[in-house]
Amino acid sequence: MNNLPETHARQQGDAHIKSILEWLALAHGRNDSEDADQLHRQIILLREAAVPTAQRIKLLDLLYGQAERIVNAELPALHEISLPVSRKLRQRVRTVLDLLATLTQDYFNSLAVLFDPLGSELDHSPQTTLRRVMHCVAWQIRISQLVASPCGIGLWQQMHSAFRSARRLGLADTPGPRGTRSIHQIYTSTLLSAIAQPASFCSSEQDFICQYIEHRTEAVELFDEPPLDSNAIFWIDLDKDSPAHALIRRIPSADMQILYFCCDNISRSAHEHLNQLEQGASAASMGLPAFAETRAGKGVLRRLQSLWGQPGKRKFPRRRQSYRVHLCTGFDNLWRLIKSPEAEVELSEWMVTNESPDGYALMHMTGQTHQLRVGDITALQAIGDRTEAVPLWHICIVRWALSENPEHIELGLQLLASRAQAAEIAQPLEFESGKVAALILPETPPLRHTQSLIVRTGAIKDTNRKIIVLLEKENLEIRELRPTSLEEQTSSIEVFSVSSDESA
Image (cartoon, rainbow, N blue to C red; front, side, top):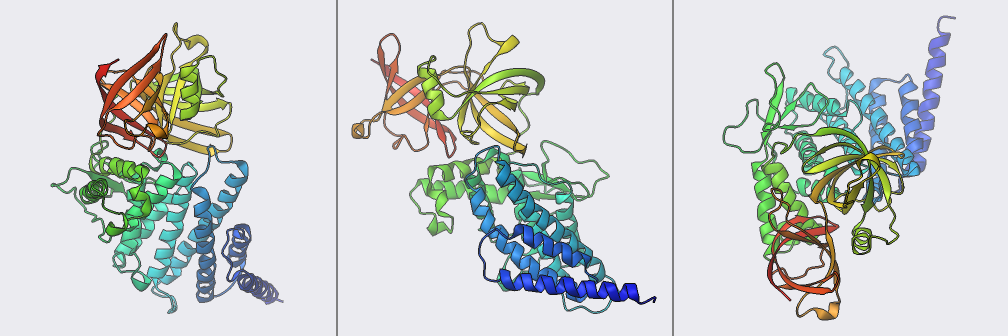
C-alpha cells in the first residue's frame, strides 16, 4: 500500500513526458510564434512530472529550442507598433514573457543539482544552462523594451546572478558553441542596450542598436575598481534589481558589491562609424546593418556616442505638477494646427505629472494615441485653470514612452520652443520636387540661441545650400535661410539650426 503514491506519481510523470514528446514532434519544423501558450503548458507539465534530473534537463533543452524559435518569430512583429500596445498584442507578449520566465526559473532550479558535489555525474555543462538562462532573461528585457513596458520584477537580479555564477565557475569568457558569444558578452551587450535608454528610441531604432552592439567582436571589460583613465564610467550593483548607472549621476555606497565598466571605446566606434558614413562609406563595408546608412541610423549613432561616451547630469530639477493639457501629435497634424488654428485636428488630453525648464512628463487621460511615436514632434497647450492668457502650443520632441498596460501610457517630452510658425520650403535646383512643410522655431535662450527649422527626416537633401522659406502672415513672406548644424535627428523628424542671410 505504501508504494501506491509513488507508483501513481511515476505513472503521471510518464504520461506528462509522453505528452511533451508528442507536442515536440508536432511542433518540429514550425517557424511562427503561435505556439507560445502551448509551449508554456508543456513547461508546466515538465515541472509537475517526477522525472530524474538528467532527463528533466534534456527535455528543458528541447523546450528551450522551441522558445528560441517563438522569440525569433515574435520580435520582428514588435518593430513597428503604436502605443499603447493593443490588448491583443499585450496578451500575446505576456504569454511569451510568462513562458520565458518559467523556463528561466526551471533552468535555475536545475543548477542546484549541477553544482551539488554529492550529486550524480550528469551529461550536461553548467555553462550551457547558464548561457540559456542569460538568453531567456535577455529576451524578456528586450521584449519589454520593444513594447515600452517596464522590465519584470527580478529580471535584472536573475541576469546578475547568472553572470556571477558563470564568473565564479570560470565560465564567463568561454566562447559559446560554434564561436558564438560568451556569457560575458551576452551580459555586457544587455547592459549596453539598457544604458542606451531604449525608451527614447522607436522599435526599429532599438533593433538597430542591438544589432550594432552584437557586431562588436571585443568584450566590454568589467573592473572591481573604477578605471581612472575613462570619461564614461558605469557601475552595476550585483545584488540589486536594476541595470547599470552612470557614475557621474550616482555614486555607489561603500557596502555594495560593485562592478565597473567604461564605454569610451564603443562611443568612439560610433563616432568613427558616423564619420565614415557621412563621407560616403557603405554600412556593409564596415560590417554594419543597412539601417546605419539611413538618416535615422546616423541619428542613432550620433545619440549613442553621447549616451555611451558623455553621460551627463540632469540639467534642471523636476517639479511635481498636476494639471491638464491638450496634446497634438505627429508632424502633419501639428503643421496644420499651427498654420490654421481653427483647423479640425485630433487632440488628446493628458496630465502633466512633473516639469522642468526643458521638458515635461505626461500621463494619458483621454483621446487617441495611434499617431504617437518616440522621436516624433508634438505640442501641448495647458487647459483648465492653467490656461495661458495667450494660449500657446509648446513644441516638443517625444523623448521616451512607457506603457504598463493597454489603458496606460506615460511620455517624456523635451521642450524645443514655446511657439512655432508653419512654413513651406524649397531648395534651389530642386524646385521640381515641390514645396516641403516645415516649422520655424524662434530663439529660446539659454536652451537655443538661433532659429531652428523642423522638417520630416530626409526632406532637406543638401544642407550646404540655402533654402527658400515661405511664410504666410498678413502677406506672403519669403526668406533665405542656411542650415548651420543638425541639432536633432530621429526616424521621424530633423531639427536644424539656421541662420538668416537676407529677407525679401
